[in-house]
Length: 71
Image (cartoon, rainbow, N blue to C red; front, side):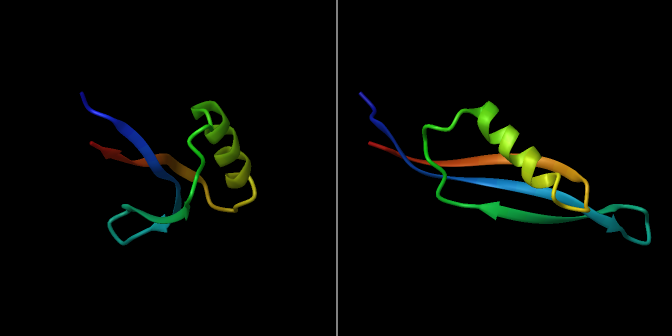
């Protein structure tokens, strides 16, 4: 039987900061580390959107990355 234990999580907000010569978007990422495992996806999306509303750059994506131990 495998045991899975939460280690940590990171929330990454990616913003579109402009475009290059070929009109391809340029991105900047802001990471927020040490998220608690008890936060729901809806809570994280709400917080990410609230933080993005403070930026002058448009939000391109929201990513939650989790690290777990498998034993």
